[in-house]
Length: 347
Image 1 (spheres, rainbow, N blue to C red):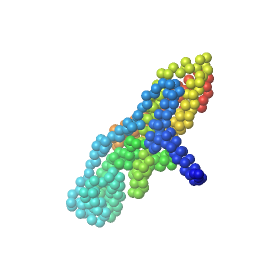
Image 2 (cartoon, rainbow, N blue to C red):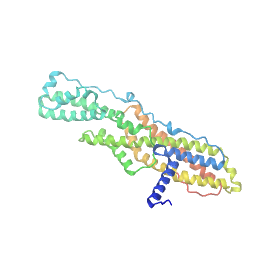
Image 3 (cartoon, one colour):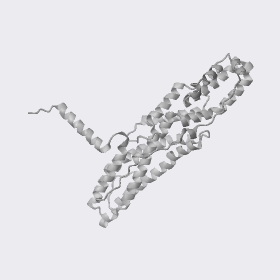
Image 4 (cartoon, one colour):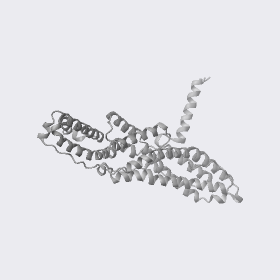
């Protein structure tokens, strides 16, 4: 006789659970697309009418502008050899020498920004050590202060970490912790404050930590791809539903069995699975929108970058809102006509 232990039973149960979960939701980045597909196909089964499924999850790209479009040209102050050697009492000449090495001339945007901030501090310190060089030093400080916002713009627009955060073309929002939003909000706030308060002491490790956090979470990109997918799928679904003449399935204002089945599909898939993701998406949007807007107002950032932000954070989000509102309105009108009162929310 075959004996089945309790551990075997638990293992089998776990495997079945994993299999069912995988069947319903897939894995990772395709969860949302599969939920929509199940939602659509179940309605099609109820109505015995084919639904042409979209495959937009594989084609949604955010089209982040190329670095070539975004790099701000920066005037490099010139210093002759005599002036360079005259600064032997302070650290400016060391920084200049480092900048003119092959490695120094290919600095990452964050390293270049740190260099410029260090140079400003060193120049101010040199005035105290070498007052006889005040005229030259103050002239260089003026030049450096003028170009610092452009160096900041290059940090924002061309850092690989920020490109990943804003333009990553994988993943959708499926589950989200409040810390993900808070960390993204904190990192974007920090980067904006670098521009708004350049006199504040800069800690290099803190800058790099915020950049790495943005890259790791790439929450803006996930939110924007999610809203694009939801806009496409909801628009297609609503259009298809309107073509089914469902009002005729409620003679005398009473729901037929098919309409009751559709109500169950709507509740199980839209309200319980799609709408919670929409709620998370709205939370991300309303938390980060003030930061996107503030960033868009910085004149040193290129028009291409600001248009990219506006397109996804405002224009595309408005299209998403309209798509979800029209979808919910369709169901509200249908259920009202058929004397059904389901749980419906536009939040």
